Image 1: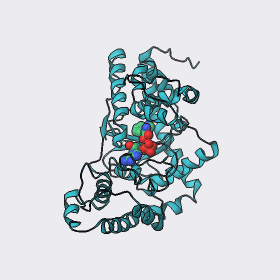
Image 2: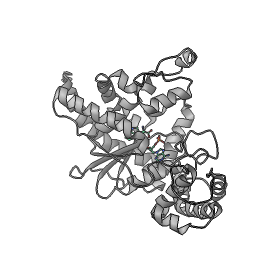
Image 3: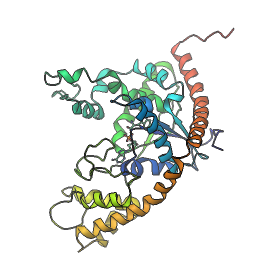
Image 4: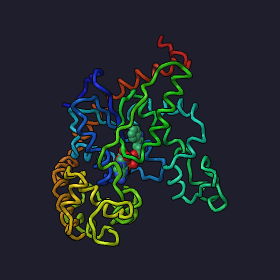
Length: 360
Ligand code: AMP
Ligand code: TRP
C-alpha cells in the first residue's frame, strides 16, 4: 500500500532531485533527510526529474536505471512511500505543458543571469561577459555554443512548473536552489497579476545544518554528483572503506585548530557534516575537539558517517533487487500527482484562454 488519498488540509510540500547517479552526502543532508522529517505534518510530493536530466548529456539506458536507483535511495533514506507520493516527472502530464506557459512570461535575461546556468555553461566552455545580466557567446566559446541547448537555459522554468503544478506551499531545497526558487515565486506572482489569482506563492525551506555541504577535495565548491574527482564527493551508498579513504584525504587547512572559520573552509565543512549527523552544535564540537588534531576529527567523523549511513545502505541493497515494488511505488505516486496536476493545469488553461475541448 502507498499513500494514495491526498489530504488537502495539510500544507503541500514538494521537492525533486535529478536522477543523475548516486545521491551525495550533500543531497542527503541538504535535502532528502529533511524531507523525511516532514511526512507526518504535510502532504508530500517528491519528484524524480528525468526531464531535467536530459538538459546535460545523458545516456538512455543509464538514465532509466538511475531513476530506479534514485527511488530506492529515497525510500532507503526515510521517504516512506506510505506517507508520501514519489513520482517520475515524465509520468505526469502537465510539467512540460505548464513550463511552456511559464516560458511565455519569462524574460530571457532572468534566465541568463541564473548562477547555475552560468556555471553549467562555463563548464561547456562559455565565458560570462562583464555584463552580469548577460552571457555573451564569446569567440572562445563559439564552438561550445553549439552544445548549449535551450533546455539548459529554460531549466529553471521547468522547475517552476514542477512546483506550481501542485500549488506547493513549501519547497525544501539546498542553498544552491534559492535563486531558482526566487524565479519561481516571481513567475507565480506575475501570472497571478496578469491572469488573476491562480498559484500559491511557494516558500523555500532550507535546513539549519547541512544546507551546503562542500567538496572534500575543494571546500570552496559545493559537493556535487558530477564531480570528476573521485575523492571530492561522498555518496550515501559508499562502503566504510571508501568513506575512510575519502575523509582521510579530505583537504584541511593550515594550522591545527579545529574551528569553524571563514579562513578554514576544509575544517568548517567537516565540522558542518559532523554537526548535521550528530545533532551537536558547531560550538559544542569545537569544544569537544579543542586541543586535538585533525586526525582525531577525521577518525571520529569517518565512524559517524559510516554508522549513520549503514541502515541506508542495507535498506537500499534490499530495495534495488525488487524492481516490481519500486515500479508500484512510482505508479501510485504518479496517479496521485496526476490528479492534482490535472486540476491545476485545467485552471491555468482556462485562465490563459485556451478553449475547452469538446468531448462530444
Ligand atoms: P541535485 O543533486 O542538484 O539534483 O540536488 C538535489 C537536492 O540536493 C537539491 O535540493 C539541492 O539543493 C540539494 N543539494 C545538492 N548538493 C548539495 C550540497 N552540496 N549541499 C547541500 N544540499 C545539496
Ligand atoms: N533543480 C533542482 C536541483 O538541481 C531539482 C529540481 C527540479 C527541483 N525541479 C524541482 C527541486 C522542484 C525542488 C523543486 O537540485
